[in-house]
Length: 156
Length: 82
Image (cartoon, rainbow over the protein chains, first blue to last red):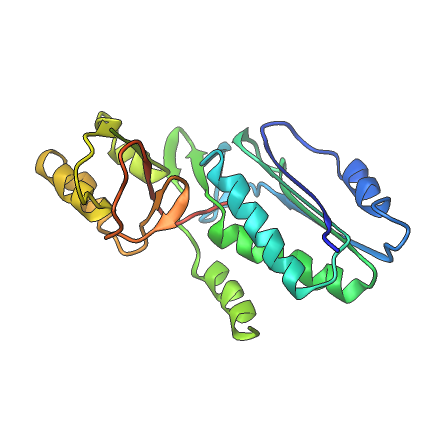
């Protein structure tokens, strides 16, 4: 059985409550819903940022996200998956990413949500540019994100 | 013709670079990088960073993979979403 999958890359904000309700109502077999929401932090390198802009590779991003969800479906019993990632200009405390997973039991939903985020961070074609006091620069990738991914690969 | 795309910081370094290149028999991403090095050495140096990936028609590709006429070749720095 394949999960109900929703993948959206959008400029608009999203509503956590309605995304949760959609996952909750996937089917009556749902016994657990785990949601994660990532926000824009106010600091980068311990200095306040003015804004963040997110670029992506239209088409490739969506297909990479579909692949990541398909991999998660191989590892866990999932009923519903929603991935939303925003692009364009964002400000501190704005919502940037949503991952929601519905499953029969909590372990599948907890683990799959973390796996999806770890893969999204290191594989999906998004790039962040920060505006800090009139200076713009591209964010560097973090070793800690790659280490988070290595943990899942050791489990394979 | 092969369409060229540069993302993230590579887009800034590639400002003013042609957005397409003539297709030729056996052309690979490595060969495109070498061709760009003639006029844009600083871009070619960025593209030579080991973390930079390439995609052909939106699939991650090898640097020595042949590129078909009409394809889309993209240079991808390490991703930073989420």
